[in-house]
Image (tube, rainbow, N blue to C red; front, side, top):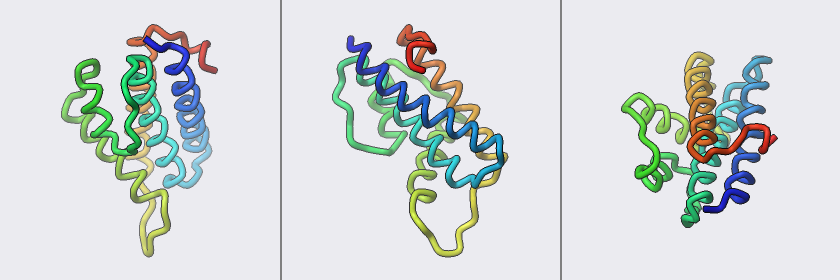
Amino acid sequence: MNESSAKEWLKKAWHNLSSAQLLYDVEHYTDIVAVEIHYAIEKSFKAFLAYENKKIPKTHDLIELYKYTQNYLKFDEDEIELLIIATEYHIRESYPQFDRSLPEREEIKEVLVFANQFFNNVLEKLNIDHGDIK
């Protein structure tokens, strides 16, 4: 068990998640919010792996990260779909693309709610107080 490493990952995840929430609330560009959400979810997965002293893969693919944690974390089909959407955010929204539309606010809201729930679930499963990572 490596709580200190997990906390470091969770601090970074919290920075991304709270930034995503702030940007969403002020109706900032949804592509930027999307990337922040993706990183929050990714770093939450990696916090769990760090806590378990598992090798942290160098990937941004949330489905791949989920596979590394399936013994500890379970998602239903709808949540897996949200992981797929959030993974696509990293691919589509991080780099310029000609004639692309921004993600819809309703979709962003749904993925943001999921990211918050997942983050809090990781805190709970690892028995880490939210105040310890702010």
